[in-house]
Length: 350
Image (cartoon, rainbow, N blue to C red):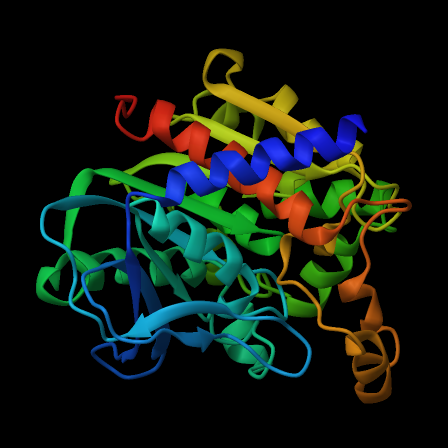
């Protein structure tokens, strides 16, 4: 009964929050770069003004999509911006549920496919350029702020970044954390069971002195005013010094379901112990798995995933005796919205 009441409260809160925006727009584009070596697939949800019929976005045979009006006119006035970063082997659609809800609440929300680490792009050379993930997000901020006619005006002092899994690491890096490849390699020798160690070994981003130096460099974008991490990985390679001095407030949300590959105690909880207590909030959701932060799975999705790639059905599984994923995500959305309301308008000055 207590869980049911809590779920109803979250639904009411969400309904009240989205009441201010009648429609949301959606645009997709390709961002070239000067040498066209790392083109980016970028998508943006934004508050829109239209009575046109909405379409399903990011809807396929496995995942349920969300509704938006493609290329809708943007609403007038300034809006805060949230940039999303997906996990390893993920893509921009994985957090469409979060993007849609935040857009309904008045945010411009942009996401990108990071070359080499997406569902349909496993190019090893692009994947090895791990430090370029933060550059990808900076390019997205540039592109969105430069096109107010398409997306609305970005309040440049109100820009947040959120990421899931490897995207959570990316978010921490662009917010000001620093990574030490040698420290991480030493830690992986002690914790070889962590999936972050296996992924890092597979990507091999520090294979040369130049690559190692780039990965250990300062990847911060000073326009970021708040950061949200969703069950991140690779956190044990982030340095104590950089985390203690993180210049922006942080919300760290962890999956609390037992996991040998990505236990909260060795990733998110360990990260929080090293962040400034005054500006950090930590929430561990006991019935959430690592994949609870991805889109809702349709009936029959597990069978389809297993048929295509045995073992991938885990993507649709939450923790034991878990609430429906939709309810877990309502909780996550409410946590993020509350954090952004309290912090994104009051950026910390380093």
